Figure 1 (cartoon, rainbow, N blue to C red):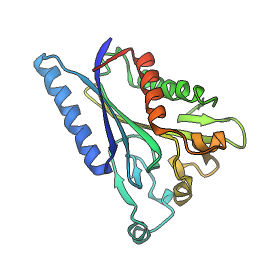
Figure 2: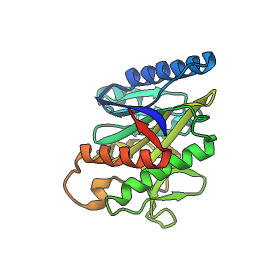
Figure 3: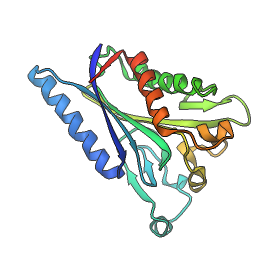
Length: 225
């Protein structure tokens, strides 16, 4: 079992949490270099409305002007993860693992596959069948149909085998924000949430956190601190 500290940040600004991730990543890298013991970390957080663009994002996938973003109080950041453009906001559980992949005997492909499985296992607890879509990282509902819709976006960065960024699972997310972008660069696929798939009242975000925590423990074989 790999010792891993789970930190729940509640609702926190994107920029603040991005910097915190980088601090934790540098801490692990430094301790590895010195041969010192270190913990891995997993951050849980919800963000105020924000659009993020990955390293290779096409800004044409943002369907509103910068002035409109300011008027609607939506932040935007160009960041150092993979993937295109996505949205984060309240009701969406964002999970940022800052872990040493070597400790988990994983490469990047194995790591992303394991993140997808965490989400698939979590969705199973809600009676929702999450699936993978070839060449489209993340977790989808009915991915091979004309009604394909993404319920979880994944974008990661790895530096000296240490990860940051992670996945964003739509729980009670206000999906209207996704109309202002081409999510992850797609123009022919939709976006959904656990609440929408269940056609019910908002889900309990604390229960969602517990289920993600358990699924992460099972798939990564961590010992929570």
